[in-house]
Image (spheres, rainbow, N blue to C red):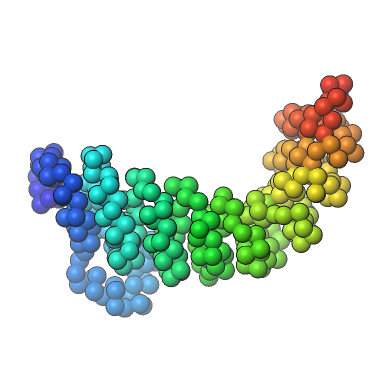
Length: 324
C-alpha cells in the first residue's frame, strides 16, 4: 500500500494487494477512514468549522478525501477482481451501518460500482434517511436513483424530505418519489405546499413532475393539474398535461384546456399535449378537428403526434385524414 501510495511501483503494489485475495478487503476498507487526524478532530467537534469547510470544499468531499491512502484504497476496491464483490459489498454495508457521515458517503461512492441486493440495503437506507442529515441523505437518494432501487419500502422517509430546508435534497427526494410510485395519500400533504408555490418556480416544477406520475382521478389532483396548464413555466405545463393524459377518460372534462396547449409556444408542450389528448381515448372525439388543424399547420414535428392521437381516438377517421 505504501509503495502504491507513494507512486514508486504502482503495478507491483497493486498486483501484490490483489494477490492477497478477498481477505484484503477489511484492510482496504479500514484505509478508507484514514484522514489528517488533527483536522479530522476539529472537523468532527466544531459545527462552525465543519460548516465552513463543507462550503469551501464542496460539502467537505475535497477536504475529507485528500488523504492518499484513502484515495488509493477506494480506487483498489472499485477496480478489484470480481470474486471480491460480495466481500466489498458486505464491508461497505457495514460502513454504512456503523460509520459517520463521511464514511457513509465514501461507502456509497464505492457501492456505485457494484450491484448489491437492495433488500440488504433497505434497513440502513431507512436509518440514514430518517436522520435527514443533509449530505448523507443526498448520497443515499442519489444511490437509490442511479441503482433504480424501488423506494416504496422507504416512502415515509422519502416523503418527509419533500419539506427539507435544503432545496437540492428536496429535489432528489421528489425525483426518487416520481419513479417509485409512492402512496398518493401520504404524499399530498407534503406535496401541496410545493404545488401552491410561486408559478414558474423550480419547486412547483418538481412537484408537478411527481404529481403527473402519481395523480388519481379525484377533483383535487385534477384541479392542480389544470392549474398547471396555465403556468409560465413550459415544464410545469408539460408535466400538467402529461398528468391529465395519464388519467385517461377520467380527465375528459379538462379536454378544452388541454387543446389550448396545441398552440403553445414550446414545441415540447405541444407534442406532449397531442400525446396526452390521444391518451384520453374515444371520448375525446371533439378534439379531432383541432388535431387536424395542428397537423396541417404545425411543421415542427408535432403533426405525427397529432396523427397518433387521432388514431387512438378514432382509428377509422384517421384513415381518411387529408394532409395539406
